[in-house]
Length: 201
Image (cartoon, rainbow, N blue to C red):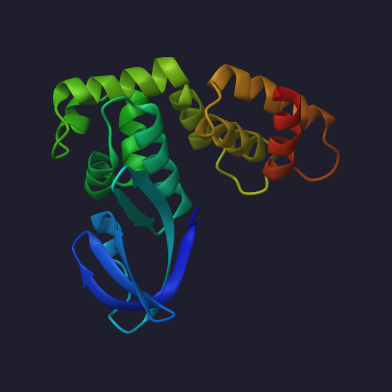
């Protein structure tokens, strides 16, 4: 798995970057928010990546932030009918926070304005993220506990991480709460995750 690329920008177009890394040019497909905010050609940049492999194609998708990449992976892995192309379209049309807020509120109208995302797909996104996975509950909690270093934020970050790994919200929350009560010292999401994964095996 290629998790990030550090290299010099050779070419930048809307939705696409080419990076020179050790004399090899890597084409990376990115949301518009990333291509609009990358440095000029000739400058160095770090891009977080997701490698998508199909039978006859390997495609690199790139993101500026972990939140963007996490949301992209959640959409293509956990919502039926959402592939990488539509995942990029969503991130190009809405900031991560705006998208999460729309899903939490069940705002089908706002989601339907995204190019390529009709009403039925918008309804499916809300249904599957809210009811099947339960991620919206964790997103809503995150908006209330967004203080760095706080125990509540560490717990919620750990719950979201387990959800992204495929665990349901209720199971993830139960395992993380147990890990948190047994943890000594400063709150640490990574420690909570490791302890929870041991308990979930």
